[in-house]
Length: 304
Image (cartoon, rainbow, N blue to C red; front, side, top):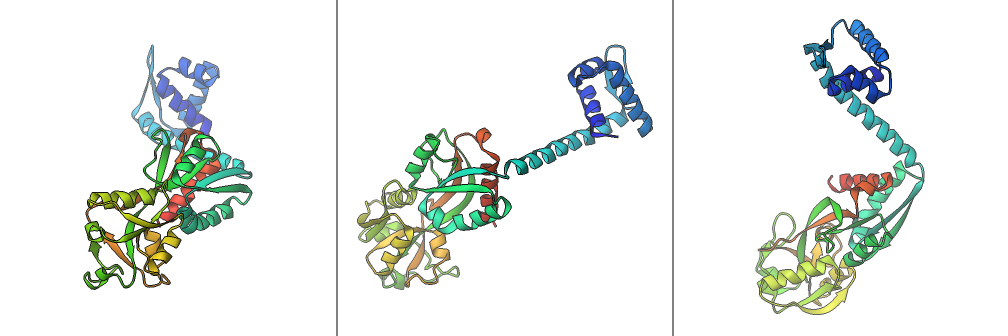
């Protein structure tokens, strides 16, 4: 039995006609009938009950068809995988990302991708979320690694990972003596209203973490008093350590807090402080095999 024989059986079952199946398969009806008779003889069972105007599957044919469709799907998948490997022998991939994504996530993704596909040339574009959307729309990048929400709702995306946002406060802040430390290394959960009189260190406008922080303050009934702006959360965290003010930082800053100058991190109560990091693109159907492979590798690494 060959893969061709399986395709013949599936086509006849779908068409319920040898003549229509032969036409769809671009072979003569006698040749198709002969092939099916030979297959039935090899299997020792009849797959079809021939009627005057159409053919029906026998019980054996129904069982055969169930596995036959799976075999054809698997064959198609294997062929697609092999074609992708061939395509991925060379090529270029333009990836846009926020500075935060580049700082904490990109190196691991790049190393894993480069190990599998060493001849794919990757060009990285670091920019704010808004700028990344402009680059996507202009066709300058293939995918953008960035947090939701997207300003342009026509873009498609795949979620990579969700991460919590924390409030970072200086080591000598008054609140540290009030709220006890929790097992995860934070000093518990705070209400943003407790910080209405504090100075804030924020990322520049256009960065999603800036918007999340501003929204959190407004939800608590005040506008943040911003004393310093920066492009990088590392810089914001370092400035918090000096006592200049408080700031909003992502989970990865908290997770790598070993040498953080004594900065204390709090969970934020009463708001959705979770950021969803995604791979955004214009049209999933137009993604190159290289782009699909990079998204898959990055997603799998971040979800470990």
